[in-house]
Image 1 (cartoon, rainbow, N blue to C red):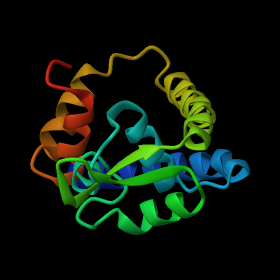
Image 2: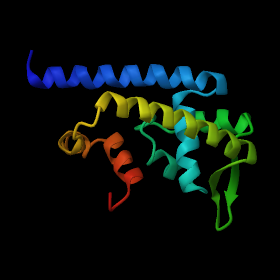
Image 3: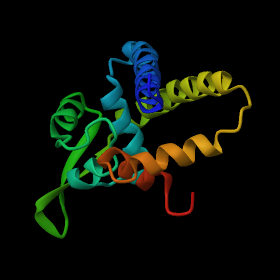
Length: 153
């Protein structure tokens, strides 16, 4: 097996395992991983346009996040308001119910990240992160992660 092939399948295996764990943890909150990601992004970036949200999402790169947002609006977790300066645009923000649920999503994320930290076991991840950032730099999902990481991270 070529190194590139093994890397591809190992990344896929980790992604699938992580998504299964995340989905199981989110099920009691009646959220999908994609919906939880929208809530998490809005916590740190609201109000946000639908386009702006799409630029920060990894779960829905290349497609409009509108159907996820529609479900969250219908559930009373996200508010859609007309932009005060341009009626053609809407701004998205969490409702009080969405903000309350966001704390539970943050707890789920924290448990998942702690599980990943346990798997890493104190190993140095700098070279792995550098490699993955370089490999994804020109991909929509890689750019979304970079935007969320910030300019100085």
